[in-house]
Image 1: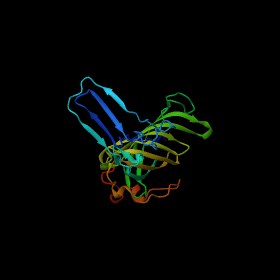
Image 2: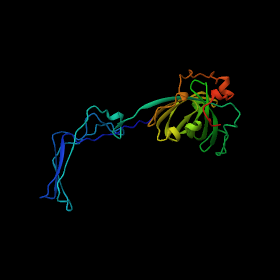
Image 3: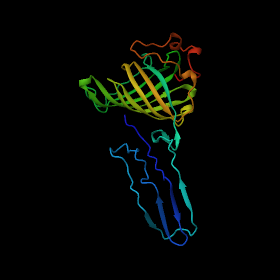
Image 4: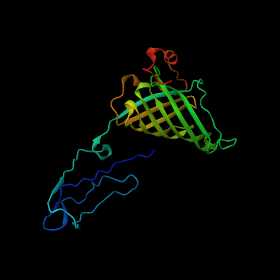
Length: 261
């Protein structure tokens, strides 16, 4: 999956002065570079470098008042962990999606009009969601998969998926990305509502029995601590996993409040 990194440009021991007598800006610095040498652009292999020069810029409409701007680098900040100059906590959330064959899902719409799965085929779906420990029913998934390519050699398909995870009164998480029927994949977390408002991150999709049992591991950023009842030690993902009888029957003690059905 693609990774992103923010480049933090810091004026180290630098000052900018505007003189009232001349209409020019003079920038001087004792540093050899405006960008630390250990920062790289994720889209290029070479290290970003800006050589030190003394530059004069002429402006015809600068005010006559002078000002000085100074900024000092903070060496304790790791650029890979900085988001708008703040550290971002990553929380892990595990859930099981289980198709119990009682929701008419999935619905395969063969828009390609071909006998073999082909580009353009659509698959709307909705399944039940359980906590990672399989002790509570928490909601549903709902969304659509768009077939991109049939992988004959892998005996499976590659889809572009757009769907949501609904967690009752807690809100929902929206995701988008590759949905592979033959191996694990990672999707982007694109947003959410309720306690998930402002969320970002990614989710690992692990096929156990396609399309009936899937294990998801979320890596979430930008939100408050998750409720304890959504957490707990997850059951080891295997094709044989099943929710507890109480969770399957949606007993009050085995569901979250107003779970989505």
